[in-house]
Image (cartoon, rainbow, N blue to C red; front, side, top):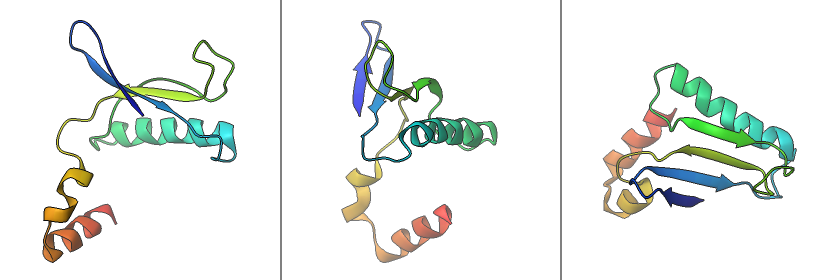
Length: 94
């Protein structure tokens, strides 16, 4: 993933998909569709601005361009969480 910042300060994320995801076309299209569906249900996920499920484009790769999610990433907080917080977090995903 790459964080993109415009001269005006607008931030977005460009995700270039790996060749190891199979089937390649549907892995990209499915991820973009899932994010769009979840957002339509009111779940706070990044907005998908654009995606291309094949490499025949100006980027030369399968990609998703999306909104940068606000907040603190889990990887930055994980080792400071207590056992109860980890269990609560796990249940929230289920």
